[in-house]
View 1 (cartoon, helix red, strand yellow):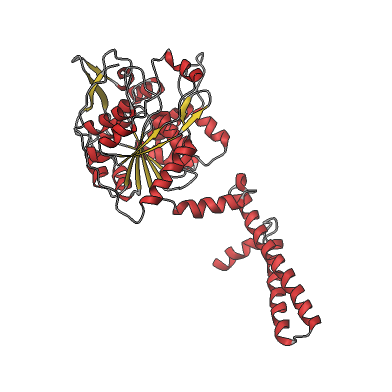
View 2 (view 1 turned 45 degrees about the vertical axis):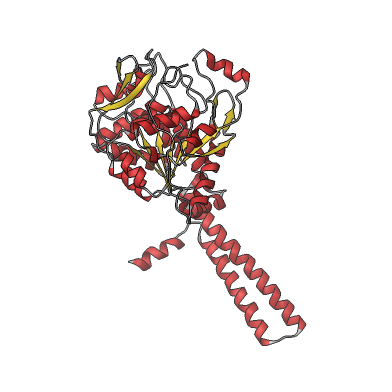
Length: 430
């Protein structure tokens, strides 16, 4: 049976025989050239031997290369012309550092775009507290976890045709019965119903998009994010928190006691680096850390723990926050040892771009590096901005910094965190 299967390679129309034959002839010529060297040392024989060796080597290499390319055209047509890139991705990136990124929203997706150029060993742990927009509607109608942030991460890590990525991000027009819905959200919803499990649906979607790495929810519990404000008022629901008039004192999850996914805990234990952010402080990053056991797992991990601070504040949610205020809020909600290194942007934002954010009451985050160091944390102060139509992190710049930190931390124990000032969730007065 195995012999017959092998002979299929030589059936007509396989486009393999000619290249295999070329490689075999090349190997035969190499053997002749080597044999001639041992027979006679005269100059004519040496020249003939050299001719056989060079011709045989050229035919052998060409035959092997074209055989592989012929196979690749069938297995992966979109990669038929970039064989080197495919081999690099499959071999080199598979040996890359194991990095866990925790957060949600567009900030997390942006960072994943950069990191996937350095390693395939990425695990994105994503918040499931979203209750607004398309995700909120699907969550209520189908009693499932919100798919929006998960979808963004899947697309960011995708290694498929651009058309497939555009399909997953396609949003239906306002004059449609599906108005406001995103195709990717609907796809994950359908997969959840087919598989009967949200995690399986995400895994199936990962295969469709051929992602580099994994995307997992922080918990499978259907949680709701709640904010307690400085005036004593309470806001329920992630979509309402950022528009509440009073400043946030603390946030928590309902119901309490929700458990993390096994995939999330396993990834944290095996990680070389754990990255928090970038993303909305109170609605994308901290909610993941409020899941039971999550903070303990991160603190106990031997991985380098990095926080990527936002470059712009958010209206009401983090209005007038400096970089150190972001760090203090995370530590106060969790554990001071959850961060070791803070990446802070020091590049000024052009006035023209700042003007676009004033209507949203958003301003650049002040990089008070010395204050962060006084709190006991290492700081990397660099230009991490991408100044296009919006102010956001440059995925390549931030990813490169993270990889350099990870490489530098290998072979030595991460520096312990010594908090030299009390970490308290104090409201910021703007």
